[in-house]
Length: 450
Image: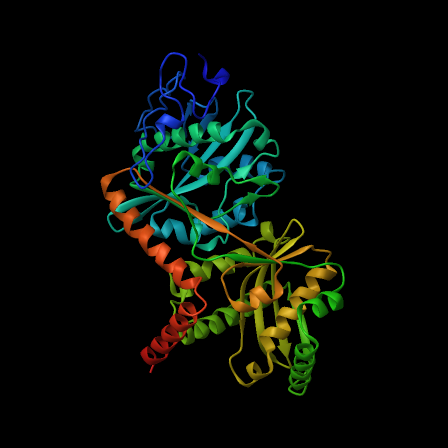
């Protein structure tokens, strides 16, 4: 039977007695077999592990797969595909290429970009994967996962009409086998984090892996989105009580007593650099107060944010802004604008006297007002369970992780990681444990900086 004409059934045995898709499922919590699917389908040809060029194969699902280890080789096709594909803002080529250039390359991260095509050669999906080495293991992750609030593949508009859950599972198993066949891409475990339920208008196919006994876990944190409407005053009145609005107007009056209050959309290159430098300084002090790691101290992180904020290719996506009180940058932010949605990814405020009068809150008001005036329909507060996000939002986005092992060493890490993330989620979802933990963490951070 040719691969392109295979008929897939999730539970019935094949007519010749070979195993079905369901029968070839890995056991939950166990290791994944990377052999070809046990179906009456054509077997992938052997790969030359020493080949320095992109590697490809005809998948048992009828999908032609090709893996690229060099972003430059796939840049033009990726950029053309992302213009019409379903994806989140974090899967744009320019964003991830900047991440790899400034952060991934320093870590030794190896991109593993998988392109999947149907029998007619039409591109169906891009999986922007990567191999990361941590201690004694190699992990298959999303490229740039740590600085992407949402991780997901890029899907063609007609993907859902062409790919059933069963067919995607077969393709995913072949992706695993294809990567494992090349020494550059071998790994011990799969760790795909922060996956949303939907990608554009389509269901995320990775969530369907759970039906075939692949482990899918709720991510410890959620994300929050506000529906904006078309009028700021109506939106504001719907979200804040009259007493709260009165208090906030009084605070704004106090801010005005310290100087002219102005919302600035930063466009000049040098001004962007100055504003981001201020934001990172403010944020670093906030991290110290909270007792959490300052990720701006990690190699390449400062350079990454400065690069994307000044990248001409991202000019229409990146928005750097601040709230000035006189000559003081009282609050700063970096956001992304993509397909009728504004994504707030970084925000900070000066922790001096002006913080008593809610400068950060006043800046958020201006960001929301600005998004409405631009005609955007949604405001995405992105990942994090801070209470203020719930106050403004209409929708909580649930995120998921996929964890699986392909070696015994990977299995040990998966078991420990699974237990840790379940415990973390339990604490973060508890109305009593999470506040207590946050206070204890902040106290520890305060004591460590004395």
